[in-house]
Image (tube, helix red, strand yellow):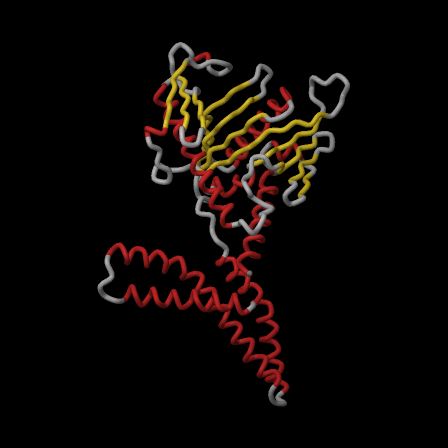
Length: 359
């Protein structure tokens, strides 16, 4: 480890000790004690890892000194044996310390709002959007997550113009956050008589679900329009003015909800989506500020970025961010092999964060 990193470890160890002393002192108020206690508990595992690393480093120094001193063959052999064991442990301990320094994504444990929209490619793009939406629905079922349809705009041939769902469960956003972006499909459409391969696209957005305490929305900032639902899926509710369109005036964001028969329920769902979109905009702006000097390859969250290609003639799925190709397109679309891609993306993101922490 370089001197800058060692200095940082010293700083964290000192801070941990200072907090411990402050908490033990009298006169610390309830609010201050709670704040200090939270910081202390967050630093404790990091400091424990630093202590274990430095103990092993100290033992390595002692063993090295012992191996180079004196003429006792038995003592020298014991020292070299200990050095060999420590050489195996030290990299693991260093990695543990570095991993503890990697900033955690505070949104990883949140639920998510999934939005899938047909892009370029007409009917074929809408059919592909429907396949992607069902892929995530199957994946959620495999994870025992709750997948709740929030809004759906269908085409006449089974495609989706756009679809929105709420996904609830443990670590939902952590697993799905790298799915945002443009997903491209290459195949021969059923309607193509000449057998030519067409390229179409759909955009995916995965937004961390925001609580009311995260985003405050003022009534004066909203324009709410109520109208009669229409289109496929809307026939059961189009006898009353139950559809809701909410416009957030400061940002121009528009959310339409017409899946429910109740105007009240549609409004609640629309506000949930609006809150998630506003929270995501804040989150991405903060991430961009933090990474102004570094272009992250993984997880930028940019919906315009092409992230993955599904090539049906070759049976392959390629994630362009990490140059990963799997020849199991059916299993990916069934949700069964999606973990292989997500695991690789998570590992790449962790490696980037480790590199940043080590600088």
